Every structure is written in C-alpha cells, then in structure tokens.
Amino acid sequence: MSERIFAVIGAGAWGTALAIQLAQDNRSTLLWSHCPEHITRLQAERENQAYLPGIKLPGSIEPIAHLAACIERAADILVVVPSSAFRQTLQHIKPLLNDQHRLAWGTKGLEQDSRRLLHQMVRDDLAITHPCAALSGPTFANEVARGLPGAITVASKDHRFAEDLAGALHHGYFRTYTSPDISGVELGGAVKNVLAIAAGISDGLGFGINTRAALITRGLAEMTRLGVAMGGQRETFMGLSGLGDLVLTCSDDQSRNRRMGLALGQGKRIEQAKTDSGKVVEGVTTAKAVYHLARELQVSMPISEQVYRVLYEDLAPRAAVQNLMERAPRAEAE
Image (cartoon, rainbow, N blue to C red; front, top):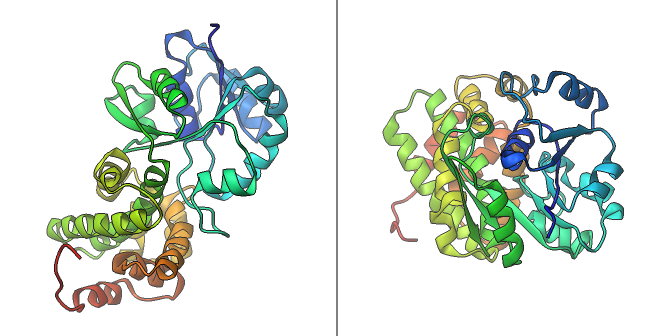
C-alpha cells in the first residue's frame, strides 16, 4: 500500500507543529493557510516566522495555497483552525472530499451557536460520514515543534483510523495514545481553557500555589461532571486530554488562556487582557458555551460560572473568588 499523504489545514503554531511531526521520516505533508501571503513566506523562508520563529520546516512539508489542490492530493485531512472558524472551514472542505478521505482535527472548543462538541457538528449539521478523529492533550506547539518529549491522545470511533493517525504522529520523543471516547477527549480540550482563565485570575490576584492547586482539582471535578453528562467516560478525564491538558494550561504562561486570566486578575479590562494574551483566546467564547450547557444539563460548575460572570457580566475578579469561597461546605465526591 502506498504512503498516504497528509494535508494539514491551518498554518498557525499548532498546525505547523503537527505538520512538522507528520513530516518526520520524509513523509509527504501538505500545509495550507487561508492567507496566500503566508504560504508565499513559508515557501520562501522554510520557517513559520509568524508563529514558530527559529524552527525550520522539514523538506517533506509542502506549503500550498490552493485548498482544492491540497485536498485532492491528500488522503488524510487534519484541520487545525480556531474553533470559531471550524464550521466554515469544514463547509469549504466537504465538497472536495472523496470516498477515500479521512478527517481529523486538532481544534479545541465547542460549536458556539449549538454548544455541541465538534464531532457532533461534523456528523449532524454537515453530514460528513467519513472516518473522523480528534487530537487533544497537554501540548504546547513550540515544544512539539522543537522535538521535546510529549504525548497526545487520538480519539476516534474508527479504531483503524485512530491507530493509523497515532502511528503517523508517533516519532522520536512524541508519544501517542488512542481512545474511542471522542466526546470525553473533545470536552476536556474545551473546558480546560475556561479553567486556565480561572487559574490565571487567581495568580494575577496574587494568590498562592495552594489556591491554584485547589482550582485545578475542583476544576477537574467540574470538567468530569459535564463530560459524563455529555456522554464522555469518567476515566478519560484522568488522562492526557483531561487532567494532563488542565495542568498544562493552568500552570504555564505559554497558555494564552492563562495569560488572559493573569491580565484580568491584575486589573486590566477584558479587551486589553485579550490583546495582552495574544492571538485567539479560545476560553473566552468557550466560557459562554460551558455556562449555558451546565445550566441546560443541570451540572454544578461554580468555577466556570464565575469565569463567565467575570467575562460577560463585568464581575470583579476578587468578587468572583469571594463568591466561590462563601459557598457552603459539601462532600468532596459530590
């Protein structure tokens, strides 16, 4: 069987890092961006100076500007765009798919209008029936692109596709695991961004490591409750895409969601905090979706609720902390 060519749709930091990983062992990998000028620079410089400066692209990566040609040449498609652009990107891709294509994504978040998981939107709204998979885990793009040790989960109901994609990404110091729980893996990758904003707010207010540890632990409980209510498996949230990604984004300033929270905790207004955090802050829009989902499903998520109120109801961060601390004692397992 001839080698299947991968197309990575989205040439930001994470898309480029995944393309670099797929291109190991001289595997042909296409890298597409919606911006032709960006592709021209990638072709000329062989480096994504806008997002991953100083990291050279392997020779087996081919930056390509035409989406139709990219999809036609590839067998497996990996979409890595912000969640706000996910639906529109898939709408452009769908007419170009043939029966042999398989589709994966490294996008994290929820569909904003419907508040559904991305695979539900792909299946129900776009009626895409090709094998699908989602990637998630504790991975900063810069470290993956530099070849530092890390691990990720590939989730799919199609076991063959999950194994093939995991095998293609598994190289050097980058380890991959598979899971059939696409709901749990996607939900963990979305909710952790909201909780990272909470952790950033806490640190921005000058609270200690005790506070951050409590936020992570109780945040994990919130994530798990919502995830199980949405069809995920409880054990998934103790894995890479749950606890692992939560610890990562709450603990290191490479996380733009954490940086957003830091700015809010230091007294900056929301628009200034967005600017300071840089690029797209997925947790801001996800906070609204999670807040409404929790209410619809009657799931208790007090930390996520306070983040929503800070972002959308102009609640002062310190008042949000006070609201959390004044709650009545309860059993930890509840």
